[in-house]
Amino acid sequence: MTEQQVSLILAKACAAFPNSAPNLSKNPGIHRLWCEMLADIDGQRALRNLHYYIQTKHFFPEISDIIRADLEELPDAEQQKAETTLLLETKEDWWENATPPPDDIIKKWGGRR
Image (cartoon, rainbow, N blue to C red; front, top):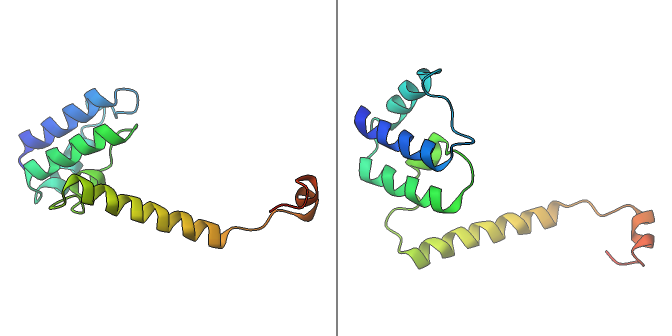
């Protein structure tokens, strides 16, 4: 990506998330870091990833959200299926690793877990 493309990405992200956006004028190092990290990334892919991020998230993106490649080459339905599968696997891991509640709480709930 060019420096101008990175500036566009940051401007759009700042406009979409004004409450969580960094102050780029007070900290120009952020812009330099983004330019460095996005130098080898295709600008159109980065812009698509930013648009997807804006539609699905609530906070200013990280660089990794812009460079992610897992959204490439997947139709919308397949993309949603992949993300849902990952989420379900994560929840299953949480359930398997969960600690049961203490006995006094189980009694309070009527013996249910």
